[in-house]
Image (tube, rainbow, N blue to C red):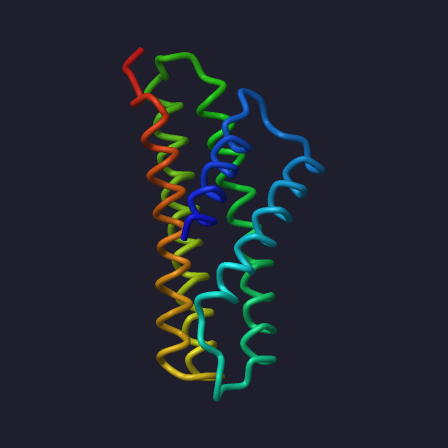
Length: 154
C-alpha cells in the first residue's frame, strides 16, 4: 500500500490550494487520482471466478458519481482554506451543512455501488471494494484534518 500513501499525499497537496482550482485542474487531479486508484483496486480485489467485466462496469459508474462528490469536497476545502483563521457563525454553519451533505452523499454512493457489486459478483468482492474505498477515503480525511487548523471563533 506504499502507492496508496503516495496517492493520498499527492491528492492532499493538490487539494490544498489557497484558491479554487480551475475546472481543468480539478479534472486533471481527479483523472490522475482515479487512474492510480484503479490500479490499487485491480491489485487488491480478487476477481477470479466472477464477472470481472461487470465489476469494472460498475466501478466505472461509481467513479463518475464519486467524482461529483469529490468536486464538491474540493470546493468546500478551497473555501475553508481561503478563509482567515477565524470564521463567523454563519460561515461555520454553511460549511458544516455542506460538509454533512457531501459526506452523506459520498457514503450513500459507496453503499449503493457496494450493493450492486455484491449482486453482480459476490460478497467477498463487494467487501474488498468497500474496504479499499473506505481505507482510501479515511486516509485522505486523516491527511486533510491532520494538516488544517481547527475553526476559530470570530
